[in-house]
Length: 162
Length: 449
Ligand SMILES: Cc1cc2nc3c(=O)[nH]c(=O)nc-3n(C[C@H](O)[C@H](O)[C@H](O)COP(=O)(O)O)c2cc1C
Ligand code: SF4
Ligand code: FES
Image 1 (tube, rainbow over the protein chains, first blue to last red):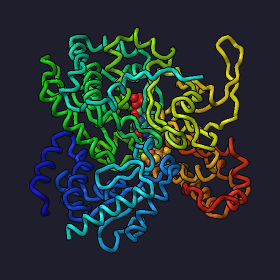
Image 2 (cartoon, rainbow over the protein chains, first blue to last red; image 1 turned 90 degrees about the horizontal axis):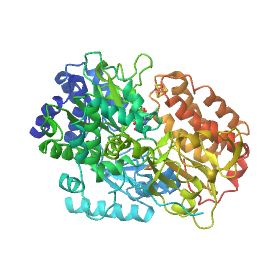
Image 3 (cartoon, helix red, strand yellow; image 1 turned 90 degrees about the vertical axis):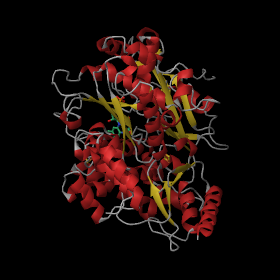
Image 4 (cartoon, each protein chain N blue to C red; image 1 turned 180 degrees about the vertical axis):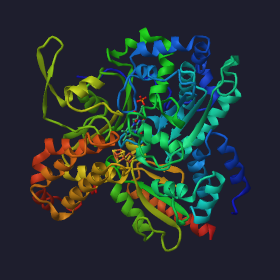
């Protein structure tokens, strides 16, 4: 597997945190997903061998936890909180705005490959609802107007990058 | 009636101008002094002090922390582990986030003191996957503490050594349940374990004795040992000691986090005086007082409460003092401190449908009543919202809930049933008339599901 050298270094370090190799499953999945973007069959086999497990032990973890994905996503990952406090503040509208701005549907990669919009459950920031986690950054009080501003920024960055 | 002043102990430095999350700032404000003092004492003295303080867990169940520690099997010869529950996944709860981001060393100090008090040599902080920045901040803070001799080898120059590692979850609510969390930390699906025999204090992480405590609880430990149990006992009331952080969300003027001595403030004071009351032109309709699984309270309902001397008194929702025992007396719970407010613009069928979608998504799937029941509750309430409500649906959905609670491996069974049971009990009429209500709603009204 072609992981980045720093990924391999971090994998070897994180394994030392636990008395049992199997505990490395979630940390390794995170590191590899950050490196490659998703979890492929090959990655599953690689992790299983590294942790002296069967591939099914790794696959069953991947399918249990919503954050791990088997397929690539868009360049930016937009996670809109769906749960009650956010919904009471208009979270469904916020989500709809992102979908229409990028002409995409929940869980799919937008046609231009730019974004994947998803609904997620409570992000533990309900006091500043509605909230949206974009890649690793939390955005608070995201009403439709703010969703539009954020979308415009993402689009502008995409044009610059291209 | 105006509200008393906030009493910030845990959140003392949250949002404070000029306060940063590095170790220099923490130490400038007296940080790690309690640790230095504690490692000079005997572990059992510290445990006694925590027990005497009466502090109850802030993660949800409100179990006395000192009592939990006393259950730890200290004779097994196996290592004892401590796991910090930083999963913060109960909807409506957002307090641990601010401790982790803005005052991580407070948590680290509380954790290491608790480790020393329990002869723990290795601790893990289990942090939810959706806190990537929080995980990074904690890792950096732990490294700073290691470099300063407060974590790792020979803490404060003594022969006591203990390390802390951060372990990230990956988006599953059930990892907040302590035995699910332990399974997840072992690298598996977070399927909760059956108790008995798997009480963490005896057979926890790697089948070793394990303590699982919430972030806020462990921060409290530091302050208890700082001020002493006697002083701590004076905050709040007997059996409800210390302060609580209330996370207020939903339809109020000023949502946010507020710290008060337990029971010092009533629901009415919190929502009207502290949070500025309902939004313009609205009135309060309902409130969920302790995270989304706590039973809902309906404004206008009355509670008959027994006094200690045998007489009774009557409370409205606004009169309930916010502490564990008073909320339990009103038939609900203080839970995680997440207070979710709904006003008269909200239809209860739709609010419940939102909550049911959450639990259906999060059931781990091990127990048939929970796996199937949570899905059926979601299916029925979603069907209602999407135009096919029947008059008997409220009863039907409550019937499903009644068959889950008490019949499952973990308390998720109760957590997913209580919303349905309490919504239908208190707003049954809205379930009966939903079809007509929906047709008369303005088309631009909020979507909740
Ligand atoms: C379904 C479920 C979810 C839970 N989620 C959390 C959580 O996110 N954070 C937390 O601290 N405790 C959570 N708990 C409670 C834990 O199981 C455990 O009681 C708690 O971490 C103990 O800490 P404490 O004694 O300090 O409160 C949850 C419990 C259940 C049943
Ligand atoms: S009650 Fe639900 S969440 Fe808990 S173990 Fe059973 S199926 Fe899993
Ligand atoms: S409900 Fe959206 S952050 Fe909690």
